[in-house]
Length: 182
Image (cartoon, rainbow, N blue to C red; front, side, top):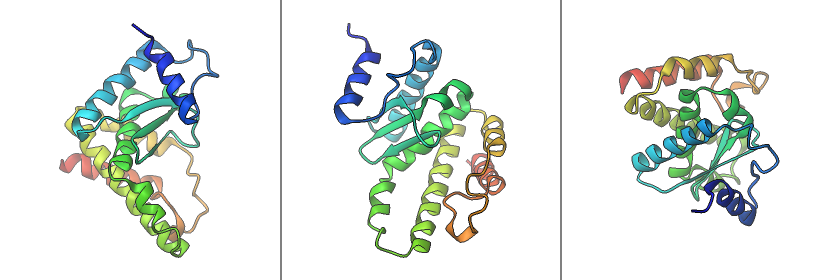
């Protein structure tokens, strides 16, 4: 049987996606890779899709596109707990499934405020779906909320109308409310 790790790297290289190739394999433990695989299987079943998950370097914790490619940041994977990893993956699955990138691209010609409004709505929608999936699949909401509240707010100085994400406390409150109501 061929090594799935090497196949994933080869596939990433073919499509030009950044990969974990520069990191030593010891950095990402087999346990973390197994966790990602298990979460991927659960989310693929839940969303009734066949999305691919790769490790690499992103500007955030994870990213996705509408063709079903989910990229998890290697550093995030090494430090986050299982519930937070699940939430980040479910959030990105929601973006991919709902084709947020394509829908946003259609709004590029609009004003920056309208574009920011749409991006903020997409982020909130993905948060809500991820919160429902977390509850449905038995993941701990407390660690997810703690993670969101403990991170630096990169948009702290951005006026509310131009922010992509809600402020951390608002985001945490929304995610918790959706989780509890599911």
